[in-house]
Image (cartoon, rainbow, N blue to C red; front, side):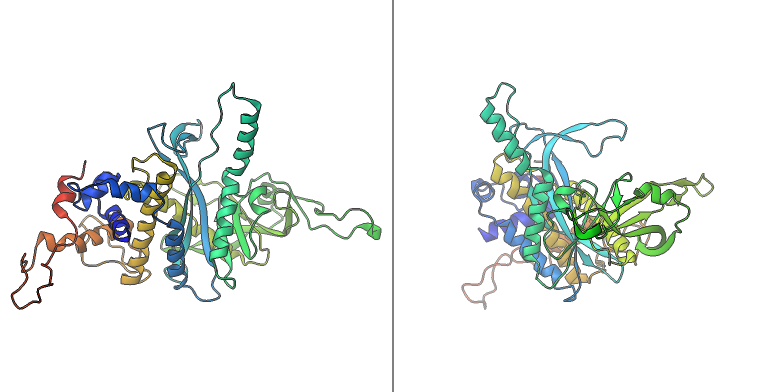
Length: 452
């Protein structure tokens, strides 16, 4: 069973066609053998992805200093599907739709947590350490009974994406050593009452906040010591009002991104209180819009401002900004998983299989990133395959996922393309139990059955 799971995980990385279960079997050269055991591996809970991701987290933490925080990013996405009978499939808001019109796509909702693997002092790479199929509760038909609707409302509250996110954060905190801080990076979807008021202990959250959020000062002592204890003090300006206030000067903070240092102009305010976080002190960070030109002589344009809150008011601003810049890499994880590794392409239907199949692909992706960091160094690049002539040299940048997959295919199939002294028989002087030399991987099968 372990060998079968290992073969499927390796096929996820080397498959040339669609990453269905049959496509993975063809990449491994098993298209003429019984395939039922591979489907049972996914349908009968024979793969413990929780233990697999725990081992991946332990391997990543070995590259951190004992007192260095574990920086993790959490986000949700959808895996597009066509069959409506697949477990968890429904109409979801399309994140790739235009801003002026809401589009819907048929797919499955998933939740992922990626942890930062430091490449150097300022740069890091996100490695997935948790993956969950998190479908919402199935809505009953309009003429359903009152009891069915009541059960639906109870299940809808338990399967809400923010509730599932809090559950995964608590599980991540349990897997993390007690002495190591945990920083969680989220977008505006998870910066709300459900998450902020139920954070696990020793956890710092950095997330986006609305520009019109109503903020308050820390409350002072009640006059005369009477009455209910206050939670919020006097009103403070909203994040957007603070950005427009010319009496508050901008601060310049250096942040490393895209291979170079950038000067971010920010305003900050701490400690503040927000109704979404309750009786918790926060730090507000307002990021000035960055100017850019589409062409060298083009008009100067500006991006939108950013508004962040941090649950640790004492955390330095440069660390808050640098960590949140790393959060974008989880979006890169989703893109690589869907386009290069075919996560979500497996044609499985049962509730167990729709969790196990994509989780194995995500775990294989994490193994590839960690193995590359161990083989070539944290910021190293494979040098056995020269880059194409049209690609500009980027010696100071990290290796892309496509480069790592090409390097893996080269190591697996290089001998099959140009065999060196290959013989199908064991030499006469070898012991009788010696097996003939075999080529790792099935190159012919992976090529000719790539589109099956």
